[in-house]
Amino acid sequence: MREISVKAEKLQKKFGDFTAVDSVSFEVEKGEIYGFLGANGAGKTTTIRMLCGLLQPTSGDAMVAGFSIKKDPDEVKKRLGYMSQKFSLYPLLTVRENIEFYAGIYGLTDAVIKARIPEVCTQVELEKLEDKITGDMPGGLKQRVALACAIAHKPAIVFLDEPTAGVDPILRRRFWEIIGALSDNGTTVFVTTHYMDEVEHCNRISLMHSGRIIKEGTIPEIKKAAFEKPILEIQTDTPVKAYDALNKVKEFNGDVSIHGALIHLITGMETAGAKALMEKALAAGGVEFTHPEEVEPTMDDVFVKLVKNYEAK
Amino acid sequence: MEIVVNVEKLDKNFKGVKAVDGLDFTVNRGEIFGLIGPDGGGKTTTLRMLSGIMKPTGGAATVLGRKLPDEAEGVKEHIGYMCQKFSLYTDLTVEENIRFFADIYLIEKKELDERLGPLLQMTRLAPFKDRLAGDLSGGMKQKLALICTLIHRPEILFLDEPTTGVDPVSRREFWEILQQIHTDGVTIVVTTPYMDEAEQCSRIGLMFGGRIIAMDTPRDMKRSFKGVVLESHPADIKSFREIIASSGHILDQQQLGSRFHLVVEDMAAADDFIKKAGKDSMTHVIAASVEDVFIERIKE
Image (cartoon, rainbow over all chains, first blue to last red):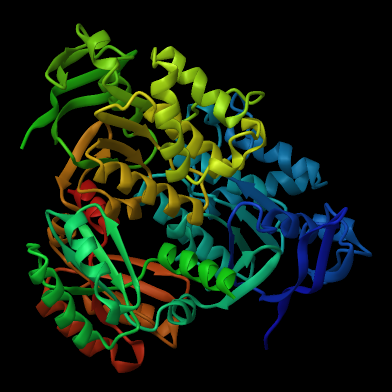
């Protein structure tokens, strides 16, 4: 059966006359990896702070791990873990001491902590490193220590704020495998990020803009909603010339953009026809180019398109 | 093509740690050259040496034909360097900040007045020219820093992670501005940890452990990937994992939400795996990404 872990209903937060979060509703299932995206100032942080029981909503409510953020914010806090890229670990303490410290804050007894440390270190793949000084460890491992601190008290929901920004791709993959195992075991994972690589790891995402959720769904669903037709790409040594040549074609009624030596064309036209017209226009403009290829939009393309669509409304 | 940056066997050691390790590359005039890789790969150190503010331990670098670090002073007026934490004066307005940097470069007032308008226009900061820099959003601060870096009309721009921590909409706008500057003939050398920004560059070098592990145009780099990448969207994840384990084809795998990215050796292996996985798994071949190439090269 579907079990709901977070349920926000018409959550609203005003600061004076300014509505930071404007009647936001959504549900997150137990064990889901849920991505929360939005530009700076979109209302993401305010929403998260409310969900964590740190900020009272002006109106509306949310149930988090079975408790109301309005009536029982302290019960909510006990059931959450939080980790960010800028998570503070004590660099002079060992891995074990850092975990003990954070578990202590959450009120775990010494006996429980002692039993929990080997368990959590196995979970985040830090076995045999318990007595290393945290400050001496590479960034990718520190990240796992931070995660261990965040999940030592077995929270129902973990909030991750750009957890892997700047970490090398191999360690990043290891990190997401650990997160995947957490989610398989029923922990709900709530990710906020600007980093589109991180977005790809989420089961479902929502995109916030000006205090509202403007799109929600799985990645394939959201890509489809933003782009019905594929993006057409050519490579050329004279991108500006190509850009001008393509912009002259009225039939495209679309969007031409330069990406270094690549030109992207987004058009509502049927693909084969658009390709032919593209080649004709470029040849007429005296541009040397490679054959147009269909490329998938990146999540970045999708994000920008959806925000622009929303603003155009 | 005119080479404007030439780096040969460049080294930088910090207390025995090789931050930059025998680097070789050239940048042609008019290119956008991207140094891409995770933190700690040596990107920032490289840029600092090329901007003449840090001395290499070994090797040679020339910028615009001048040898570094000996002729660094002669280089500085022809380049612009924007570091990760560019300092703006928060209690000065946008325009006052620009005028301050123009003064440092000894630009005459009349000259500056002519340059100011187009730069504010290009960055869409014109309506905010009287706002205090401290009251700007993160994306706007980046754009103001960029103007301050451009005010003396440098031939080469060195930008150190200009888009880190900036949201996607502002990031896209920042790149549009860079494309425009590039169109005006300025050479750009830029660092970024975001693999997807590779597409914005004319040529990229992937940096890891102080070295460039691959260098090419973004398109040819993706084509240089030796394996074949597959994407699957199976309905039943558990049984799909068993297919992966028993197929004997999978060199690398990654689960992304409810999708899978898999790497197999060649097209024959891909066809065979697609057969084994069945139609319901929606397995199909996709183009390799720059990140796929990065991981393949590190593993080698």
